[in-house]
Image (tube, rainbow, N blue to C red):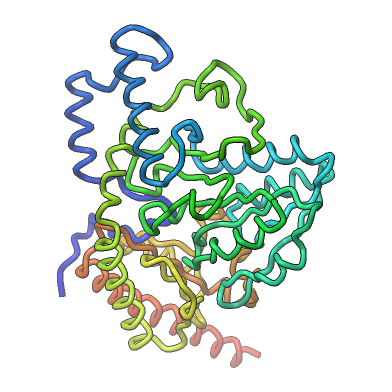
Length: 400
């Protein structure tokens, strides 16, 4: 068994954010030292700024080629939370007077859920699309509820907590039969699944660079030509007047560099899946009372959501953190919330099960040695927590 340095961190929370690619960081440091990327506003006309504008142009062009859309349909912003807000609010402001119904899955990211609740307070009718215990979306609900009153259907490509993949092609077919707009949160799919925006007939798609080994602080919003659009941020004429604010050139440059790695996507996903399957099989062999959430469903290659019986998830997370393992109990944006995961509750898990959950999300740089170290630590910590809990129960029973 490999030895772990006490100061080292084994990072297994890649659905929350990814570490920037090592080669990317090396090149970035050299470019900054040589004053290649630091200065110049892309909106200015002098040489320094024109170089930055070229970065934006090339990133936009490469993204459009990769995902089969037009360069003019791409809007750079701060991330998917901004993109999700922009989409739902744009459709409500544009179509709300004649089409006031929105279909939104129950397990969306909070940036979609909270925005849907906001426009609901303004008069929108939100119909929440159910999911079952396997994390699978209810297609019959969509069929029975989409109509001429529906303005938008908003679903994610892949769930950030369970890794469950939604059948976007099937959903799109249902939605387009009623000429309804379709928004897909593609954050977790970037770098993990093939995406063809043209074939899927998606009207809006949202992405974040930091979930794809690039720098934090930038995102991409795809808005199909002719789809309703209202500025969320007003200001200068950036992004063809659709999103005010100076573009984050460094982050966009990093995204451009990472896009070329999509050519090896199948190989990388195969390797990550092998590690995930090894982890899940080992844990179920070595720890009793472990359930892999949505194991029978189509999932992302890197994601494991576990329910570990008789173990509090927060206690487990803190114990593992002290041992140098970075994992989570659910979505990072909900950390510190004493309530169990809304995603798991929406799937039909009990509060006790949801509070005993652990999410492990692997990355391209995760190694078999790291997984084996984590398995050993998890076995040890679970055994200790269960022992303490058992002794506490026994003590209380005698005291009673």
